[in-house]
Length: 106
Length: 241
Image (cartoon, rainbow over all chains, first blue to last red; front, side, top):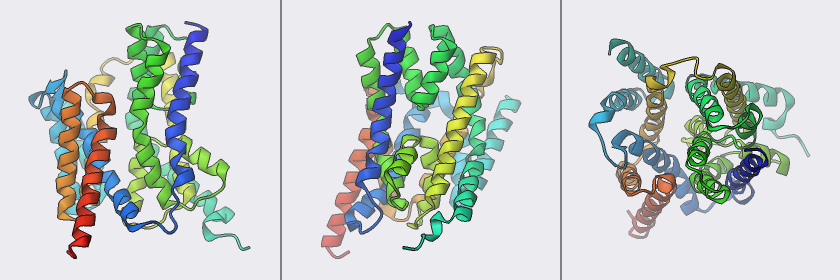
């Protein structure tokens, strides 16, 4: 694996770089259409929802909830603290404490 | 032309440092993941140089692991690059969001800021934008540079420590990351339909994953559900709700 790996690395770098950079040349914060504004507002909600659901609810290509009860417990701890405090550092702190408690108690 | 407030040297330095510092706690996640990556990469047959080369040039955890997995199965160069593209297309959405919240800046700054966009950087940055306000581009850059350096250090730790730290991967550190992500969802929700959209996004992502489309699940689920949301928004506006 000599030269071949560098071709792979450079290729990966390009296809990672391009999607990350292009929006910075298309979207500008000034004078945005209200619909575009609404779409952008929705993005964090749907992106994060779709990023966390599969690892917590699936495994080996199937629905798998019981295998992930520990993680789900940790995540729900964070979600509940976020809901009541509206402060993300607090919810993350609570989740990390829950993570360590679960690891050291089990 | 007067210099805008956000680009006065003192402010630049302060915001950059604030961003650097704010991102530091991600070392809890990056270190174990980077060690795992470094060790796995050497096991796969990559040299230390190409291992750190991948982290410095690609800087995308999920696709770096994908590349190793595919290399182990003997996949072609084209397959690996295509897989990387599919996984990383989701960054178009994150970059769009960040780009909308910072002043445009010159081409060089846009390229540097964009090139370093990650899930974690997006998570941290979007917390400060949810109110709809603008944030300092230097803060964003500080966050991104901090994460970049952390990933390099963690990869190097993996190259030199290899498998010397057993059990670190079994702690389930990702759960803390997911807790951060769900907290952002919880805090960002401002309408009742938002909750429904989050559930739709989750359901689509899960459906795609169990049907073998895990690499494009985030992108497709986010696109479909956000457009559903946009449809609801336009319909509500038209109906005068």
